[in-house]
Length: 437
Image (cartoon, rainbow, N blue to C red; front, top):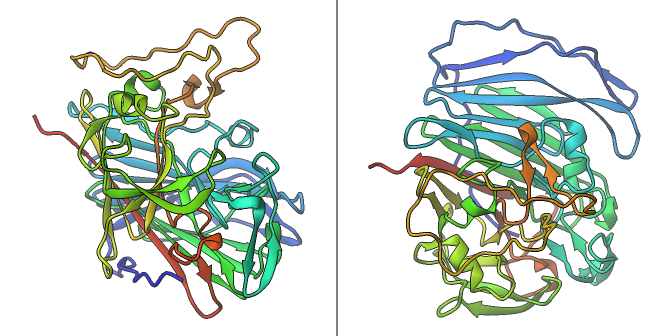
């Protein structure tokens, strides 16, 4: 069990935050309970508030087990700098993050879809979703806890579990509560869900700050000992969500880690570690992402990096990513021991010709929007994303803060077991900035 300390505070009575509830048609059906929304009329009393939150509808979904129709809420944060973040109750998904470049031009820097049907397509690679109970993989889809063996659903190559199983936390419409600038989304996972022991109540607390930090705090409690490892699976491209692999290769990345967890061909950890020194995984100093990817065995990253931190250290610097042409910068801070760097290696590559080069062009010209030409009749098609964007291989990168993958099966990894009476806490900050000329 991890013993993190919560460092966030709730908005006080004097908090100058504007919250507006937009009308939503109809009522929400949750099993036998009808939840009717009471709408507050938009006000202008707090137009000068440092952060505003608006709430509207993002369509409806059917509960994956009961089939009942549920309304999906969308939350939009906006601060005085013009930065906006959107998240929805379905899957506690982050759907949009709009940040400025060095010239003040805004663009959306996370991949996603325009509507609920998009998020429910089979080829959605968990865009922006909250992942649980266990992020990443459970080797063989099994583990032993307190002398009892558990078999969980195997949804990865019919051999392992990936990202919580066939119906993970990302497939549910979460409950919501708004207080000041904070939106808390909550989900209850019953005993036996996807094969896991214990009923678990999980929440994620989202908040946009005045300094362009978007903060997520995950919490969980359980009625029985059970493994927990939550994460957010946002896909980032600081050049703009639709600019593709050419701009991803031009990002400059650094990661605060001197080791990675060794894995097999299915990305299942062996329990051993590899020191990054002298390898393509040494990102302790900033490196251009494309040339660094070209030197890896699979021409892309999909590894858990072990964050370098002090024994008693809580929130720790994880990574810094810069897109030099736009000047956009994203830093990640977390209290978790690991982070999965994933460069969208398994997104569509219809012509099988998307590959990083050992050297990028010397100059950073205008942001490219190059798209592979997909041959007529090709069975592999791009993922159709927001605003007509086409998403291909290497079109984004993920920093999934987490415990080490498959920790429940490796005694030498940080424990992932949550016991009754304890609380799982996972805090992550995404801080956006621009380079100063």
